[in-house]
Amino acid sequence: MARCVFHIDLDAFFVSVEQALDPKLKGKPVVVGGDPERRGVVASASYEARPFGVHAGMPLSRAHRLCPQATFLQANFSRYRAASARFMGILADFSPHIEPLGLDEAYLDVTGFEKPYGSPQQLALSIKDRIHEELKLTASIGIATCKVVAKIASELWKPNGLLEIAVGEERDFLGPLPIAKLPGVGRKTEEILRQMGIATIGELASLSQETIKSRLAVSGVAMHRCANAIDDRKVEAPGEPKSISQQITFARDTLDRRFLAAELSHLCEEVSDRLRSQAKQARCLTVRLRYADFETIARQITLQEATNVNQVMFFVAFQLLNKALTEKEKAIRLIGIRASSLVGKEKQLSMFDPGVERAERLDKAINQIRSKYGLTSIQRGGTIPNLG
Ligand code: TTP
Ligand code: MG
Image (cartoon, rainbow, N blue to C red; front, side, top):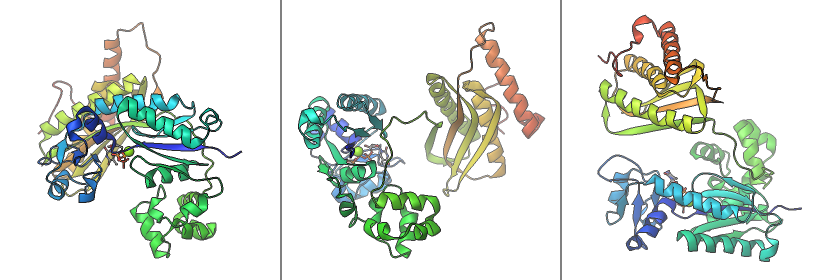
């Protein structure tokens, strides 16, 4: 039996949440991302700002030049998280088979659940109504027999869209669309395909699998299957996160070690908090640096013992930062930290005072760093040792 898969994506999500809270912003060009005088990028642009060429990922300064009359707002993540939780709650009322893909997007397998509504379209309209009534937001919904077709359909009919691709019509629907509409086809892949004379999904679909495999290896095969609307991926809640990361772009490029260390310390606090809230520990820590010229490097270490202790993470990350700073004297634009190789929290050693356990872990980490980078590379004392 054919499946009935929905892809649901909220329209201009961050902006629409702001417009719902402040109706004066409705129908106007609005950009969420931050102050256009400062560095940063557009996170979300209202549909009224898009005809001016404003889109997500563009520097705010450029968005301001293109559309100076737009209202620029700082992102307010707690608002978006709250709206997202309510959005997912509404979807879960229609089917238990839900796969969130971020804050404003989800797949829903409604096979069999459409019966009481009369048709998949009627069910989709009920979802849209509830989202509108309860959240004052609009959603676009694609309906198809598989994920990839449903996703392309929802994106094609934005905003406030509803597009159903009937069973058996998937390939005819995909055929004329440009290859860039296929998920996973980025600029590089698009260029390779263009060089092969492939501009549409239909042209990609008609290639032999061997031809595409020889140029794009395994990812080419996956794309080729999608282009032929062969997609049996289930709708299921994603597994555990593989890593937790946090990064910050500075308002000004800097080589100020004290400032960098302080920022790193904040990032470690945030990541270790998130690890602890998920009862996870990390075995691997990575510090990423992006220089003023956009060169990006990563320095990584695998710990002998997994941790989620802020102090331990900071000491380790600080050494990785120091090492990178010694290697290159270039101003830094962005710093980030990633905790990966996550494991469930070990059982608590209840006989010990947690403070003792923490100190032991710190000692272990310091010893490990010393053996790797030398005895003088790390010192106890103030939080930010030896910055000179
Ligand atoms: P999207 O669904 O890609 O974008 P959108 O909801 O703003 O607009 P659309 O109507 O085209 O769906 O992303 C959802 C939210 O994720 C978006 O509102 C803001 C955030 N986001 C970023 O922070 N940075 C980005 O580069 C993108 C693409 C999205
Ligand atoms: Mg969206």
